[in-house]
Length: 262
Length: 179
Image (cartoon, each protein chain N blue to C red):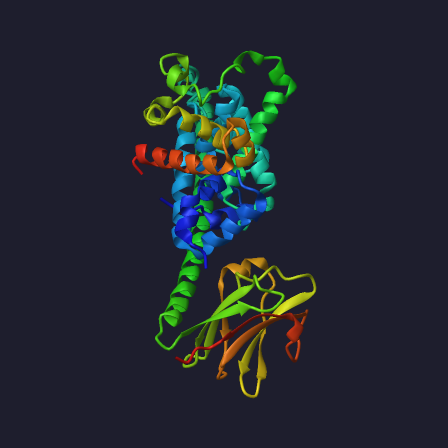
């Protein structure tokens, strides 16, 4: 177990934000910060202080830089403010005035249309973002509901011989027939291999596959939801060849945890 | 206080210009300040900043949330770009600004043109409250991008001492900022 207070006091988080740590240590801290909100909070405070300090040094500027970037990366619909160029011509012939004025209104109209397009794009973007956040929220809500259920049992899956640094955590709910599993403590899956989760009954030892776990590294950051209607007594995770195995390969048993009935 | 916008960063990595513009909004001031602390020239800082954001856009996929903070990643790009500029030919033709360390000299420069040139009034009241050793440490580790090993060697103090002093300095900074 990590002593987060010791980590916070160590000065490593400040160095982490500055990019002054070796890459492997930075990776460790990135990982720890996902599991320990108090560490993440400290990192955010340090980062905010440094961002404010740096921003305080920034010279005054106009917005030209972003406009140039936008032009380079090919952003469309750049709004160019056109000068009100018709007024000097007002004394000229009525026909000229009409021509120029109509030109102006044509431009103004175009500009307005462009602005509308921009605003609509932005709206669309925000809506997508909103939908995603809502769906993440509802996932969290249903996860939380299971985790806070008194029937849910937390099972620590400890690293087994040869894989001592691995670990995983399962949340098992026998009533709702669902198990959540956190596999952040497993190393990245080697190519053409896959982790497989097993529900075990002891005495006699009988493994039942609960399926293979996703291999995308992004899914390591989430609690994975797994349907599990079995009367599980222990969970095990093995590394198997792509596609999974019918029976667990015990030489590659990474983690194992027995449900504490106490 | 808020966390980094992971979703926006992801959208940017997927090629959304809108997301990029919001990442720009969020980080441009801080990165501009870091660059300026190195190149010490408004116009050059602006040029380098543009370069930095092009790199952020073009190489966004190389940012990996498992390796560290987005700010740290962008900070590295900014420092490297600013230092590259100093080493470049264009700069060597115009060496007159190189003689002083900008961040370290803020307190004594308070009365000269630097103050007018930058928005340093706000930062002044923070920096003035920091101990000189803190200013030196923050300059090396944050603005100059020394690793703590190199920083310790530069300051001739043990690595552990640098770590704890740096933490104390950042804490001081957080206090004076009234976090």
